[in-house]
Length: 511
Image (tube, rainbow, N blue to C red; front, side):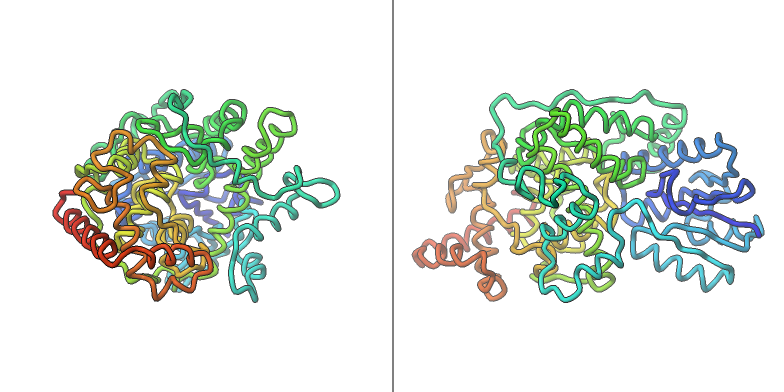
């Protein structure tokens, strides 16, 4: 029986279930498909990162004696889609059995279902064992719950895997969550520690040339390129973060600084999401640093919560609610995405900074994504589909399973509260507190309706008032509506008028 073991681009782990019990005469198949990098126009750095990592992974497997079928983007016989390339491989190699690890995205699940019907051969779809919680287990946890709160799911994961736990079943330190200790405003001289830049292999050099020649019309800068593209390099990144940066991660994980893209964030999500690093080894190494007094509990717990808690929770929500989840639009937000999300000029320093970081690095840390670009999209009523496509396209760690619930659910509250207990809407006050963006901005964060007032202020109140019928019952918002009701009618009218002017200026490219 001739077996084909197909590897998706985010399954670059030699421990992936589809490679278990492999025979030397089985064929491992990886493919660079044009439709996978153009169904949204992915950032050039993201494409280069994924293709280079795939090629290195294939080379490592081949060096171990495995049969590899690798179809490059420029292969003259490449048909451009995963479905047609798998079909071609089956026909050319006379395959009668496909083994594959379950895909991470719903659209790829549909693709496999189509292949099962068209090929007429056995396709074994195996569990992805790299995650802490399977979709089935998450569904069991969610059953009967009116609200799916990440905090309680996270505690269950901590207990199950005995991470940061005492022998008596209590959390280390006596608390489950140290988030309140991780919200320090940036100091005046806060700067990112220097990050690693890896030596470019011949494979990477070839891929960079390929991407430059074929995807120069995609948003984003290809160079400079500093990503790890092998497991060995990714492990160096992990070791560097845990030993040098993790001790400061907690203090400033919500801080934002002009010209400082990374600060003390891990930069590991891209490597975890394509399989170069495994979630368990990441959490265990962080926990070990705490046990050896190399990192404080608040930083260690905050980091582990992102990996063991939030990442797993988001995946669980995705598979629990798809495909209907992707069609939700709770606020009926349909305003077209403004050009400044694609790098056009804006006088809002916070937006300009977040987008410039994104353009240059295919990266912007989670607070910028949530409280700057996401927050603006929420309070401006930007089209939820266009916003999701933007986040999916521009970030190197973005795959639909992790991007959609984070964007639609967390940033846009477009799911009506499945992910978040309230909308993460905020005025300029939050950005001014947690960043230095406002110091050099054209707009004044403390002004509401004047000519140079920050657009976030009036837009925030406009969002709150125009969605009152949907939000007033939210138990976390009574004070907000009480505050609005205390404004004079003249002030309310001026705020609404200022919001309308801001939206018009946004539409005309004048904001």
